[in-house]
Length: 131
Figure 1: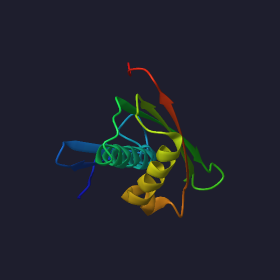
Figure 2 (figure 1 turned 90 degrees about the vertical axis):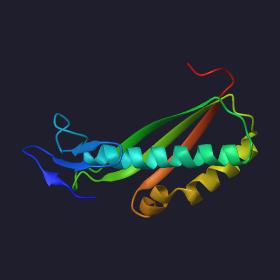
Figure 3 (figure 1 turned 180 degrees about the vertical axis):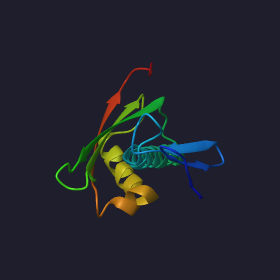
């Protein structure tokens, strides 16, 4: 990837399109937002893949990410909490616990940051179709 400096951001062209990154949310995605999104979406994608490999049906997956930053330091990300809501998933709590262990183990972004950012997860199952 190559980034070009703009007046208020840096821009790169990727396969999907242009990505504009800035420390100011008025001019692009903020770096910490991309970091947290990478952890959340990578985890969600691996979770989806594992559910499908195990032939466990589900209707939808939603992920809420809460982030804690150290304002006394460099405002670095210290904690990320991911809350997964699985809709109409056909799996027991015991089986889901094992699936989340596999998800953590097989998510490359999680593995890349786990020693420097505390990542916690919770999940809930909703037995109704997603809206």
